[in-house]
View 1 (cartoon, helix red, strand yellow):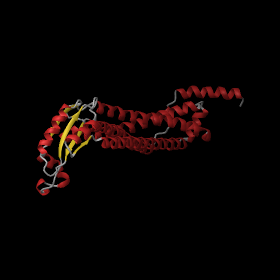
View 2 (cartoon, one colour; view 1 turned 30 degrees about the vertical axis):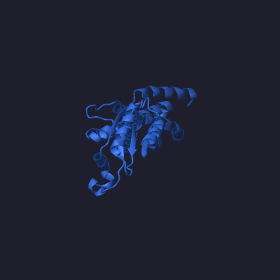
View 3 (spheres, rainbow, N blue to C red; view 1 turned 45 degrees about the horizontal axis):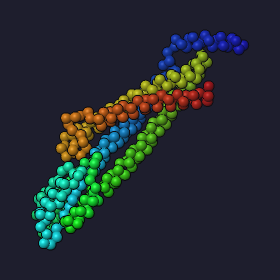
Length: 317
């Protein structure tokens, strides 16, 4: 057969190919397809849950940092012969005059003992222990007072006074938050890498299993781009199904966690969530992130399968 005849015959097959169902190129394998969808579903769920928890934790960390940076604790240690209530009032009056202080509250002896109960037990078991008294001082985070000057003045006027601006806790919290974000990012990369590898093996398996059909299509005029496009659509569909299922499960779990926190007065104050505002900016960001993860997994399945087909075709035909 001459080169011209071959090309003419190939053109005839090409016109027939355009009317042929592309489903025959990727023969459906229910077991393999369901297995790949299940793998993508699990990996997408892990990735989406990780992304949601990172945003959730970041919002909580930011909330805690604001709480810590907007309050200062002043402690007065009991000393022999000290009229501690009078010293507390003197310290409170001074703090009220400091620029940048928005609120001053003296904790009573009973309130202090109740705060210590989780660690030291009932107040009755403390006996005659000398417990420091506290003053909670709320400050303006945007225009805070000079804490060092306040500390020096209180130590001079009222000996035995300790000022804690929670700076060390804020630094530790920031470091912990950054560590969790980095660890979560590495986890996401590993999960997406595992997803890509699963799709590579599935694509190669599908091509090897349909080798004869691929060769027939190739002879009929299908070029590499055509065959890659068919496989790309197939695996994009599988990736989208698995991604949607994984994202939905992640949304359900994170939604349940969020409403559980919103139902607890103590927890919702800490995390900054409320039952009256179920779709806060943080909640919307989590939903967007989870949807983005599902779409990215589908896109990843599509791109990886296409590149795998191009790299495998040269060995099959």
